Length: 252
Image 1 (cartoon, rainbow, N blue to C red):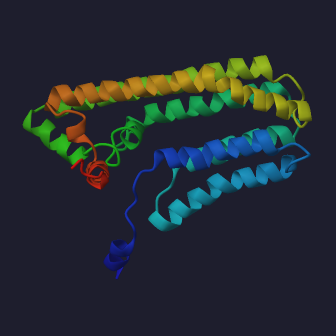
Image 2 (tube, rainbow, N blue to C red; image 1 turned 90 degrees about the horizontal axis):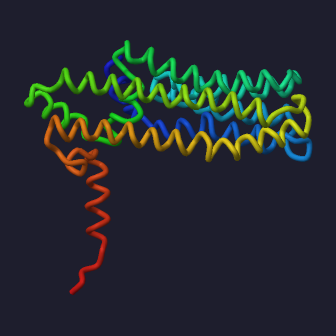
Image 3 (tube, one colour; image 1 turned 30 degrees about the vertical axis):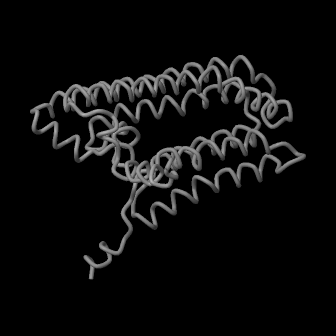
């Protein structure tokens, strides 16, 4: 009976970018853009913003029996931002909060290296992106498992470094831009301005660093297994690529 229920339960597939969008990006945009009195207001913006990570986290828990770390982080982030506005705390608390969230993620990445599920594996080295089984088999054949694990650990340290960079930059930007009392229209406008400025100053450099980490990981895989990137792409990505090519009309 118990085995049947486990068999019927759908398999959980990591969806880190969907997690980030639903749990952090959308709620943050709601708080920053729709919390003015002419839109939702502070209270309803907080309630609706919290509904996204809460709903997504409950969906993952009920459907897959797994806790969603990013959804929990989203609830904390949205709750803190909304709470600062509702309680009309000083803008220095926003700077602390903006620095605290990426700092906590960076620390979580470091802590996860001591567990059997490092966050780098979830985000970059996972079956939805790479053919992990094929890579692992080649590593075993080349007796390079230990070296690869060390490289993966190095990637985790670099990955956590991107969040520490974001933490420091978030604090500097928040202190520089957001100076009005929380709960005011000026506070919301400055929050929106900070979001716009943070994209070129924080998001793009962090994205470049992430691409650099993935390149470091791929170069390691290439050197230790001899496979090209196309050869270690996830099988479902290969199928999608083949179907796309098959749909193209013949030149004859």
